[in-house]
Image (cartoon, rainbow, N blue to C red; front, top):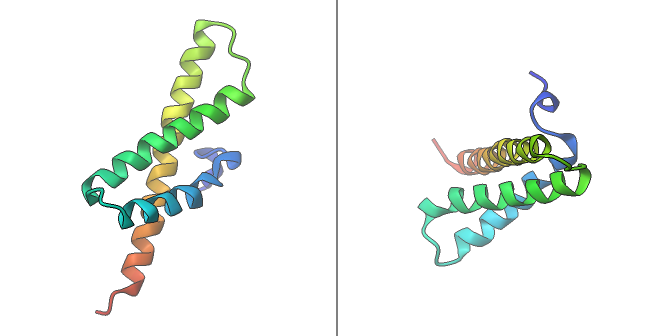
Length: 95
């Protein structure tokens, strides 16, 4: 499977950014159950900024497409970041 069919290559930099945000959240007083939600919101927001900065939004159709791309890319990127974190955690376990 080719990840580039799903995640825009320009947004891949957000995976490590979100990972480090997650590490910071983990060290804060925020409950672990809220960290994926916060990462999702941050990822969608950052994706929306990129989409709006690189697109010509001139009509309702363009706005709807920008919203869709922002949400789907944000969810995929946050999921990838959480997945990377879980790979790291699982690799440290002794079984």
